[in-house]
Length: 298
Image 1 (cartoon, one colour):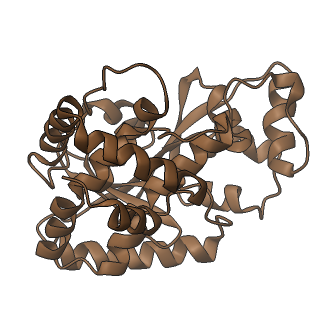
Image 2 (cartoon, helix red, strand yellow):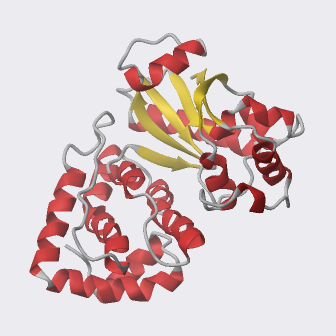
């Protein structure tokens, strides 16, 4: 199920796992393979993850390891994703997906662990459920943005209909995601990503004609325009979309993504950049932030 110690270390580096976590993960990997209970749980988890590989309308939730809290519990999803790699890569080969796209897509495991370490200062996987999309062939990193194969459905139709999107339920769409630790969200980088996506999905998923790009993010909250210059990357990103705001405040979203920890007190938030000042000053003035829902035609 898992590579031997030498190969496991190499695989972890390929997946961009933070270097300071590699030795501990290799050591714990031996324990996982030597313990019959852990090995059975690993096999079961991988089976759940790769079942119906490629389906874009069937969310997967990994089983939770019933184990004392600690490094092994926090990091166990790493072994599930590593053990699933042969299945993921086989699916990518079947679709003709370039090895470089596979590598950059699957390296989001390391980015996710870096987010966890930034927040908690220890090894762990921040959001295992998010990473199932990568392993199942649902999401791909193409330049600055990530693109998730999805379908227009009941969960997002109300707000997007308010933004003018008129599609039948089940219509294939692409959800856009903005990964952390990948430089500015410049218009040029976004243009390049969208051009790559147009070519990529037409070539590798020709049976799924995508009608619209969707995005659900605090970055689409129109209130940001009150704080940021009109030529800022975030404002120009917003202007790509037809948007509708959510009516439920989500104040911890920008705090988590801008400052790394949603539990930080509002009064302690730094003011080093225009975005930090926007997020913190708005909250300190008694305002709220909201998830924006946006789309544009493809």
